[in-house]
Structures are given as C-alpha cells and as structure tokens.
Length: 519
Image (tube, rainbow, N blue to C red; front, side, top):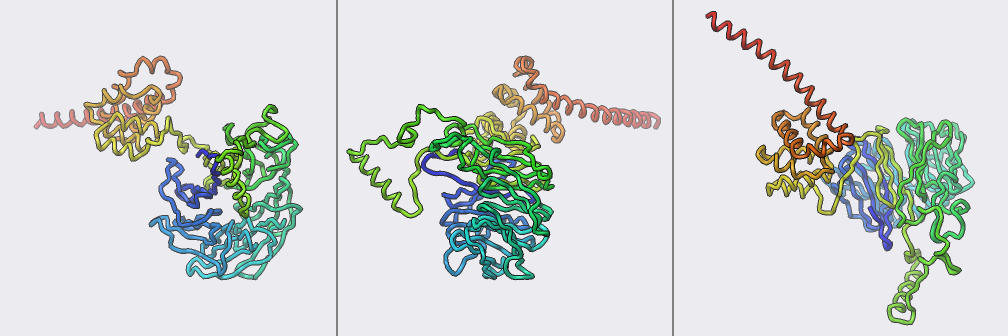
C-alpha cells in the first residue's frame, strides 16, 4: 500500500453486487487485481493490458468484469475461468478513460481522452454499434441511469450530456456549467444527477425536468494540507480544491466526495450540509498532509527537498542532468521530484450501504459499520500468508500454525488451526500463545462453542488456556471482559441445553428400568 518516490499508484474501485469483491487497479502497472474484502487477499490478477487501466465496471450478472485502458482496448474478464474472453477495439487507436454498461449488460460504452468521443459496442457480438460525438473535451465520466437506457457523460468542455442510445440518436439534453466537469453520478433511483466541477462545487440536477436543483460549495471542506511547491498557505491555495470522485449512498440520502486532498467529505443531499470529514492518512511522508510547512526549509530557489544538490561537474552529475533533460524532452513526461501527493482517486459504496471503500495514494481503505466485516491483521509480515498456515499444518507444527492464523486474524484459519490440534498437544499449544493474541483466541473459542459439535474438545481448550494464562487474564480482566463474557454466555447456554437433555434421558431410563423390573 505504500507509494515509493519513483512510482505513484492510482486506483479505481468497483464493488461486486453479491459477494462484495473489491477491484484495485494499479495504473502504472497496467494490471487489474480482484480482492476479497472480508479477508483482504487478492485472488486473481489480469495483466493483459499494455498501458494504464483507467476504468472498471462489474456487469449486472456479477460474473464478468470490464476494464478500459489507455492502450486503446476495453476487455471483458470471466470471473469463473479468469480469462479475457472478449476485447473491444476501435478502427483507429484511442485512449479510453471512462466506462459504463447498461442494466441489461448488452451495451458497452467507453469515453476517450484524445478524440472526445463515446464508443458503443455490443456485448454479445463485440461489434462497434455507434460513435457519439459532441463533446469538445476528454470524456472522464460515463454512467447509465438505473431506471432507463439514458447515458450521462461529463467532460472537460463544461457540459454534462444525456444520450438516448435506443430510441433516438445524439444527445437528449445538455447541462452547461461554468467550469470543467470532472465526474458525474446518478442517484440509485435515477431521479437525480450529481456532478462535480473544477471550482469545487457539486451540482445536483433533475434529469427529467432538465433543471438544476441545488449546489454544494465544497472548496473549504475539501481543502487539505499544503504542498511542498506551494508558496501560499493551504487556506489561500487554489490547487486541488475540487472533487474528482462522487458516490451516492444506497438510499441516496447522502453522498461521498473525494479529490486531491487528505479528506473525504460526506454530505447530506437533502439539506446540503457537511455531515463528516474522514482524514484518510496521517502519513507525513506523503505530500499534502501537513497543514503548515517548516519555513526553515524554504529558500529563494524553492523548497530544499526539491533542490538538486548533486555535483554537476562529476560524471554522476552530468549523467543525471542528461537524464533529466531527456525526460523533459519527451512529450507528456516529467521527472518525479519530491514526495507523492495524497489523493482519493475513487469512492464506492457497497450495495448494502453498510460499508464503503476509498482508493487513495496510501492504499485501498475499507470503512464498515460492522465489526465482523473488518480485516484487521496483527503484526502482519510478508511471510504471514494462508499458504504458510497450511504448510505448518502439513508439517504438524500446531504452535506455528495457530500463531500465524492469529496474526492474520482470519476467522476460518483460526478455527481450522484450533480444531486440528491433537488433544494431547493442547496444553503445550495453549501455553505458547502470546498475551496479545489471547483476546482473539478467546473470541474464536466462544464462536466454536456455539457452532462446533466437539464440546469436550473446546472445553479442554478453555481449561488449558485458563491454567496457562490465568494470572494474566486476572490482571487484564477489564480488557478481556467482552471476550470472556461471550465465552461465559456460550458455556451457560450449552449447559442449560445439556441439562434439559440429560434430565429427559434420566427420566426415560428410569421408566425403562422400571418396566424391565416389572416384567
């Protein structure tokens, strides 16, 4: 998740509709990676693109993923067989920066960076159906209405256009703005359209009446830290004070907005008020995090970190100057000086509305209202993987396997490691568990107590754990109280169930014995 000084990562996110898969795209690596949000692990990487991946879209059937790239192709990926089964191209090479599909999944649309056109393909045949012209700037936003086949597009030409792809050709309507439009989204019910502009405002439109409903002024809310190259304070700087990504909530009551800032803003749509600001990082190695810069690092020539202090009379200095000159001579290229800037590239809310994700310079951040949804590894290292847990179990190393699973903090692996320990090895394994993992292990035993049929085995685990760490549990009872209460609740409930069963069996046995004696 860290970003080096020599290479910057930008991410695009999409939520899967049923299994909540999260897709992360490393643009400069030109590959698409699909992650399981609940565990935080990547299970497939698609690397057929030869240039930056700029947009993603899950199809309505949830078994196909679309990706658009600057290499001039839109590719369809099969999430069952993990292969590229269809590639959409244009007669002449184009650079695609936006992507959308209708509700039926039969029409694919992609917006371009260079020719300012929107290309329309058939999903079944792969044929190019239409080319929509009219924009005079890069088409960076595309989205279909959730209720009909109207396509909304936003462009740097300060307009949002609506296109009817089936019943009429060309734009249905055009919404003009005073500044460049950076992105556009539909409300889930299709009765409202939101778009952000370069002046830091979010405009809300009624797509049926073609009228602007209201606008949110977000320049002060999105204002972040001060960049190294800024000669003004963060409050007086105009750079980056705009939203580049928007996302409605599942019910459309609030909207998330992010951009080139360390903040993500949540607004109430009906009242147009700021509900909350999320600070995505406190990492001081990223640019734009500090509110005030150290004036001692500022010189007449600029910030000290941006001044090249290498000797120019040596071979290394000459070589470096030559490389920098060549880099500046290449069209569209610029050498990377200083630190990467903190930014939020994309925001997506899960269909359930209980969680949302942000693709940032710091990494992919997942926020959730459910504690069970959170993936919170403890003391994670490059060697701590599910494969390492399986290898330890195969080599019959129960101590190592259990500690690795606790460090990963994944429920299925922890339960697997507990069950596979032989009863004779439980005292040794229980005594080897570090103190910082005790709470997690007690929680796992409480869950197993309610679901696992091996009651005596789990009770043996609890007994040995109390014997080995009883003193620590007694001293830290306040911190361990929630886990201990869960375990006590599970034991009490099972005790009541077993007591009723045993009483019933006792009466049945007495009746049978009395019947046999009479005979």
